Amino acid sequence: MRIRIDLKILIFFALFYLTNQIEIYLIIMVFCIAHELGHMIMGLILKMKPERVEIIPCGLAISFKTNPDDLNFKIKNGNLLEVKKIFVAITGPVVSLILAILYIYFDPFYITKQDAIYSNILILIFNLMPLYPLDGGRIIKGILHIEYGNKQAKCIINKISNITMVVLTIISSIAVYYYKNIAIFLICIFLWIITLQENKKFRSNLRMYEILEKK
Image 1 (tube, helix red, strand yellow):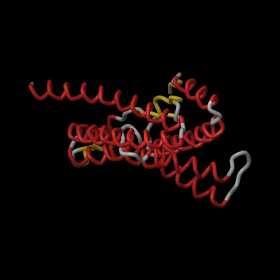
Image 2 (cartoon, one colour):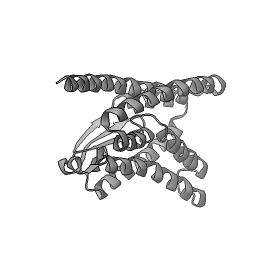
Image 3 (cartoon, one colour):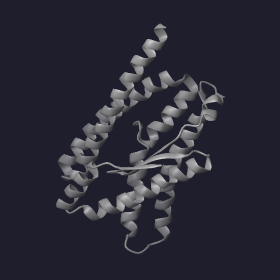
Image 4 (cartoon, one colour):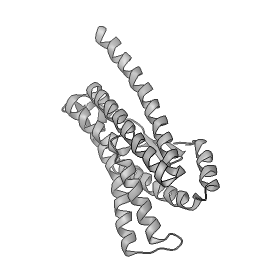
């Protein structure tokens, strides 16, 4: 298993430190890691092998090796791998929801109840946005893949992701104007970087499909 660190995390640390928001950022990072560990545990339960762990500005990103047997087990227009991916994607938000509920009744050391509940609800909402490759986008893509096939699923989720980012940018701009919170601005930029990277991958995949269809 490979471990990689996204150096953009240093920029986030510096900016949050300079704006006196480093404490809440560290708390969110702790719960983001717990969220991602939920993904990993579900993957291991489903007999998926972790391939890479990346430390990113929003916690961890975990990818799994593809098992050929899962690809060969067909389910409608998808396969067993897509079903496993859906379960893995759902587990992270479920962990965040459980932690938020637990902190209503418990007040552990170092992290106040309010900060813990706020952080986990924020992570839950953030990850359930219909934006690929966030959990919400992965769940939608997996369901679409099983129903319509891989190509159609990628086309639909790409449109949904771009529309989501436009709406989110408008909302974030208003929020930044009123609350003067740099965290909102940074998250929006981070999501745009992810979205543009996924758009590039989508165009490459689309060209590949066009080449294969001509043969």
